Length: 298
Image (cartoon, rainbow, N blue to C red; front, side):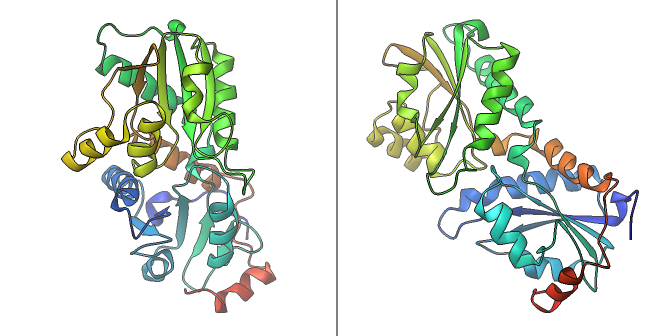
């Protein structure tokens, strides 16, 4: 069955986050963007779902009654969870489209790898400089932009989204320099001061949520004493004061990229690129797709 057009007003959006049983902050962006997209009335229904916490995605899918369901993973990279584990467990063994007894399901790419995230990164950097101009707003030409990510030597795809953003923004010549830095790969976040040849630094954490990496680990790596960071955490105040001078550099630090309101538009783009694709098909002939019905929770 080839479908040339899908009416999103008759479709459901499931915004899928990783979730955590230990960190409530990890779920906040899913609820934030689901609330925004629900208010826009683009879809018949918008639901929050998670892999590691309630409400989990399989039970959520069972409750939906729309003929189309678009699942958008609110993940940074096309790594193990978003590209392998979750699609496999949901039954997408033969591709990103699947027909069940209840609906046609489409599994979209993660938001973090979309090229429109460039605008989100640049918006974050502009916003923090405008909001905290003391002693004066830094000009991009006198500023080094750092995109900070997790990175891991266990998954080569982990850093690709950040490397791609660095490449795109460098080509714009919008800043004196642009670098990707990481928690677990080289160059590490603690090297920002050495890498920057400018006095001004803007650091944008390329994470979905303002969890412990964004709120504690990165500020410490940028030079803030861990004792001070933990005191601020306990007080419920920002763990980094903009701007802060460390190692003769003036550093502005933004909230996590995934909490930016502009991400809602990226989510819509992920849906539309599937919904408007000439290849959109739920493949009734896809034998392996049929076989997964009995293996899935829906």
